[in-house]
Image 1 (cartoon, rainbow, N blue to C red):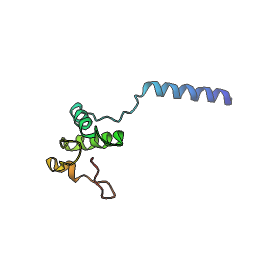
Image 2: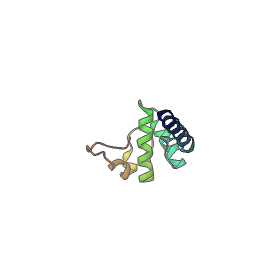
Image 3: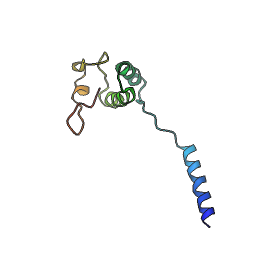
Image 4: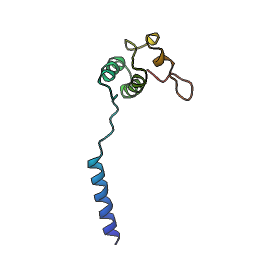
Length: 90
């Protein structure tokens, strides 16, 4: 009985993993992806920068120019903060 249950469980997990798409850390908008790649190209932790830039871009519809600073160009991007009050957007 235990072997049958284990076999069914494994089959179910394999079926679910083949149906569901893996989650990628990319912005939904192609324009955000390009802007965030440019913004984060010099970041020490590129994946984290790209992830949060994408979140901010999707919400604000803009990304400041350059790889650092220039947040005055996009006030929404500049003003987003974490729950600890630190800047959310790179």
